[in-house]
Length: 554
Image: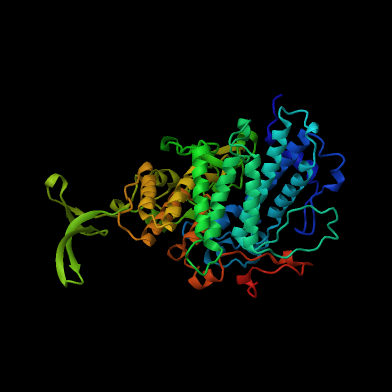
């Protein structure tokens, strides 16, 4: 019997299970008691529940403030300020790029974790109910045992991913792993140390890994639902985050976690069947469901899942959305980002003052804009005056494909520009939200190599990415570990631009001083990179405490 696609049950799942809005997180439970006798009876019910869980996850990731700026990208890309600029639009969001997360609209929306706990509550409900269901109820599927395992495995993965997002944003957070039949009598929960949260994430991943397979039985579910590859990608990020943020007083990572990340990625490479997309089809990766996609949030207009508030909507102009401004967008790419990440040296001979020998020397050196130097192609001397364009790595496909309007002060990002129109005034972006992909995993191997002191391996991985993408400025041999780590941060900034990772990359690698002007070493060691908790969540809950750095600042 043909299995039904989970995406077909999303609306049914939400309507059946969440017939109202959850108000105060940790004060309410999923609406389960009403449906115990009516729901949880068949494979269709389980499909509905799992689909509802994915829909809740999507809602959590794409939700934002009253201007609908999606939180996933605010947390992961917007906060550092060096990748793009947020312009004023009445909501105060631009303040987060100065390190101030306390504005009323910002803390009320982005400081509120309620939507993540809705996802967790649904995961807990699925784990409780489906675990206790007899497989004899699943008469519409070919393999009832595998069907049950898959549903439970996905619930474990979604819960683990939700807690991973939570702990990266807030550090210590409440830990809820069960449902409660009497929410009124339930004790209000305080926060659980991030160490325990990360252990729970790891345990959930191990449970999910046992229950999920590497392949998909239904191509429509590929990439946008969890499999073993999704779990391994999450584990790799978890291990690196735990290795580097468990104790921010030191820059030395926990090597056991580094080693775990390495073996995890090795297994994913060997078993996942993933491969990088040919650069000739560059945009396919970001439309979604490509050969390198590992886990994505569905946002395809093929199924009317496109979004009018996709992160791309805040960048794209008239060239891509016909009724937008031709020159203005609320977000624009920082020219400094482009000049820093896509720069190259121009080597030429000239006189250079040697400050130690106190003499002028005729040597080859990186020339500056406006400097006249001499080069010798085929042994023939040629005088060259260096221009700005000569110092740009303009052949890198990520520079050529991701950015336009380079001649004006406010360039734009077109990494996501698969625009569809439902009517003359409504543009919907049909690009999946890429959570994990294969290139991400391959680059993480360079980070792992650096933690292990294998500078040569890290250099080769970074250069491999630059060569593959047509870049001209390679990492030089014999650089120090810190110098190569800086080049790694630059490479992540090029490869993973606007994918929700860059802020966390800078925290892990300790490269934040070179990129985030507002994050001092003192604030970092006070864990001031975490977000404050919305004051509304403290109402009637005396056991909940504010994020440590923000105590007394709200």
